Length: 60
Image (tube, rainbow, N blue to C red):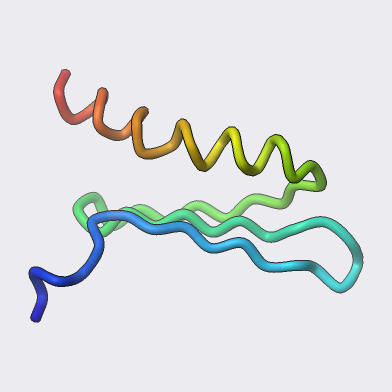
């Protein structure tokens, strides 16, 4: 069912040349953002804040 699809999701993959690919997708806005990061701490912080930032934008 389409209603079972997540509104937004992210994935993290290890790069062969070092670091990580981070893919963020938002279904409601058809957004897709791909970034490269080397710090696991930064990835964790960014992915924690990302949904909250989208929720604030939606409420505004």
